Each structure stands twice: as C-alpha cells, then as structure tokens.
Amino acid sequence: MKREDSKHEIDNIKRYQEEGYDVSYLFENNHLINAETKKVYKPEDIFIVAHHRYEGMSDPDDMSILYVIETKDGAKGTHLLGYGPTADLEEAEFFKDIPKSNYSKNADINELT
Image (tube, rainbow, N blue to C red; front, side):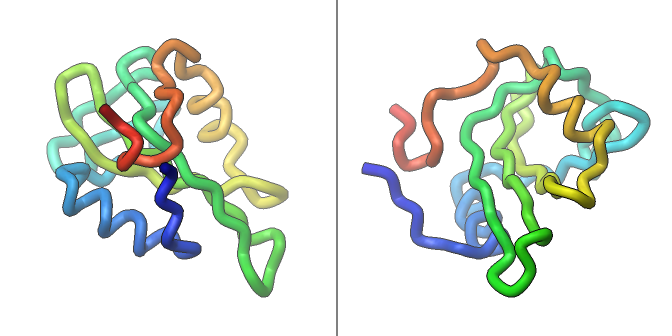
C-alpha cells in the first residue's frame, strides 16, 4: 500500500534520510553532483527509486518533484526539481534523459521489496 503521508517536500526528505537516502544532489553544468563528495553523474549513472510531485497550496506555479536516487556507485539521496513555468529546462531535460529502465515502478520507498 502506498504511504503518502506528506504534502510537503521536507517531510519526505527527512523520511528518506532516515531510510539511508542522505546524500544531497545538486544540478550544475548538465550533471547531477553529490553535494558532499563533488562526484559528477550522467543520466545513465542514476537510478530513480521513487518520486513525489508537489503543487503549491497557495501558488499553483510553485511545483516540484522530489526524486529519490541511487547512483551507479551506490550513493543514495534526494534531489528536488522545480517544474512548471519557472522550471530550469536543462535540469528537466537531464531527468528526461535518465533511461526509462533506470526508473523504479514504485512511487514510494515503502513499496520496495
């Protein structure tokens, strides 16, 4: 059963951190970067374990997607991507370039087996 108990990104980020997804990823120069180690990842290096979409309660343009990520080298963490009219198009394209085979069919970590 899907557990969607949070309407706020930070609540899910904290929950995933408790499950070991504690790396923060940044997007720079068309790559995803481990914020701590500065290791650089290409789309094919990334596996999307889960994702959650959010829409702002007071501002419909305030939209984001929380990606729960595992990388080829075993690092696990999250990345928050803004989408909608104010989205960074290069960042959105990067996530579109992740091979579909690297996306889990699960929407929530609690569904993983």
